[in-house]
Every structure is written in C-alpha cells, then in structure tokens.
Length: 345
Ligand SMILES: Cc1cc2nc3c(=O)[nH]c(=O)nc-3n(C[C@H](O)[C@H](O)[C@H](O)COP(=O)(O)OP(=O)(O)OC[C@H]3O[C@@H](n4cnc5c(N)ncnc54)[C@H](O)[C@@H]3O)c2cc1C
Image (tube, rainbow, N blue to C red):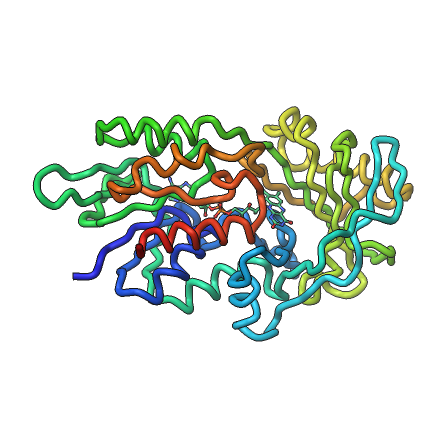
C-alpha cells in the first residue's frame, strides 16, 4: 500500500511537497479552504482586468528546482517584468534604485498559474472549498491521521499530514487536535512564536494610461503609508491598453488602522496618498477600486527548526514561508520540497 499523505493548503509550500512526492508511490490529497489553488500568490479578474493582489511576482530560488519547474512549462504565458523597481521615501521622493531582482516572473494569466501548473502536472487530488478544522491521530495499531472539515466531514487513513497555512492558522489547527503528545506542543509553540506583518492591498483602476520608467515603487524604510506601488499594465494580458491598474500594498501601520474600513473609503484614502506620491491629481479619482486584507501577509521571523520538526517521526509535518522566516514564493516552494524529501526518506 502506498503511503497516503494529506496536505493542508495549495500554496507554494504545498506545491513543493506535491512536486517531490509525485516521483514516488505516495498518494497525495491536498485540501484548501479557498475556491482556487495558490494561496497568497493570488490573482483576481474584474472588469476585463487581471491582477496579482498578493505576491506580485516570483524570483529565482537558491534551489534550481524552482526555476526548473517554472521553465518546464515553457514560456507559454510566462512573463519576466522588464521595467525596474524604484524607491520612494516617507516624504514622497522617488528615485532609481533597489532593483536587485534578477528576474520578476509572473504569467499573463496571473501568478496563480504557477501552482495550477505544478499541481496539474502531478497525480495529486485537490479538494477545494474544504476548510480543515481539526485533525486526530487514530489510536490502536495503525496510528493514521484523520482530518475533519468545518462541516464535520472526516477524511481518514493518512500516514502523514503536512500543514502549510500561515503560522497563526497552523497554530489554531494544532490547538484543535485531540492528539495529546509533548511533540505536538513543541510544534504548536514553534508556530505560535512566528509573527506576521499585516498588509491591506488596495487596487485602483484608471481609464487612462501613463508611462513611467518603473514597474513598481518600494519604500525600503517602511515609513510611507504606501509600502509598495506596482503597475499591473507592465504585465501583458493584465490590463487593456490605455487603462491603468495600480496595486498599492499599504504599510503595516496603515493596514492595521484601516483593516476593517469598507473598500470604498479605504481606497479613497489610499488614492489620495498615491496621487500625492505620484504628484498627479488624476490619481485621486479611480474609476473602480478593489481591496484584499492579508492579515497574515509576511512572516517577521522563522520558526525554531528543531521544534517545528519535533513530530515528524509521528507523521506530522509543517511547511511554508514561516518555517524559513521569509515571505517569498520561491522560499515557500523550496521549504515544501525539503519537507517532501524528508517524507520520502
Ligand atoms: C500582499 C503580499 C505581497 C507579496 N509579494 C510577494 C512577491 O512579490 N514575491 C514573492 O515571492 N512573495 C510575495 N509574497 C509572499 C508570498 O505570497 C508567500 O510567501 C507565499 O505565497 C507563501 O506560500 P505558502 O504556501 O507558505 O502559504 P500560502 O500561500 O498562504 O498557502 C497556505 C494555504 O493554506 C490554505 N489554508 C489556510 N487555512 C486552511 C484550513 N484551515 N483548511 C484548508 N486550507 C487552509 C490557504 O487558503 C492557502 O491556500 C507576498 C505576500 C503578500 C500577502
């Protein structure tokens, strides 16, 4: 009998696990509470536009496999953003610099293509719109794991479980299990010790197009309320010609203060800040807006490696950007691959 592995999540880390296990006899099932795969590397479509409102692009990893996987799908719809990243400061001064990323990869159909393509290339079963609420370790001889979703449906008989939600959500899951074992407590404490930065993404659409020498502006000091401002029109297939769609990732302070504001009022506030930053009054009046709150956007620190792995001998694994302490698609994928390799061993 092949080992049965359950993965909670379908983001980059889960894709890394599934990518490794695809070359083995393991039978893999992924569960995600969302309607689509890919987690925080997210794309939305609205009014004829497509925009990446979580991770904006991926860059090459230290592990060649990430680049290899990206390239294995050919250049079908893959795009390397050519325009550079410039910087701005708290006073709104904009200048050249800080484009240290060799590649800025995304897809014409959006960054979710990465997860879609990785998972489509495997034999894994993907179960969407299934929020896992608790899991148990069966007693008796087989010691298998069961997952239970919010509707009370049980998924039994897994030899291993890999948890990939952001650390606070993984902590909740770990607190909701019946398994009483010191190892579980160690893993839970390791996840609970990871803090996350909150980001509210504001989407501003305009019916005009303006040329700039940059793709995005970044505030490296993190003092300006607009932490990151990107032009989705630099990605082919995202914004019709002669329109403009700005992705404003607001600073953690601004995001926390405005987290519960309705989209219209948060976007109106953000549009004022963007107009001031770009020194152009036209940006005060977007013709439509959107927003997404990412309460757990980017990890601030890494989990203790020994603690997070404390229950692996019992078949309980964790993977994700928080395990490595860096909010990056390629880092989450690489971490997932390392977990996959340990599972195989
Ligand atoms: C605003 C923003 C901008 C970013 N910009 C970049 C960037 O430009 N470049 C870059 O490389 N990285 C960027 N990142 C970081 C990058 O998106 C993440 O580091 C990476 O996607 C994390 O992948 P993951 O698999 O660890 O977690 P996730 O992608 O969060 O995957 C976890 C999955 O678990 C699912 N889940 C959670 N709880 C449950 C449950 N109870 N039951 C079932 N499913 C559950 C979620 O729906 C999700 O799909 C950005 C992130 C944000 C939020």
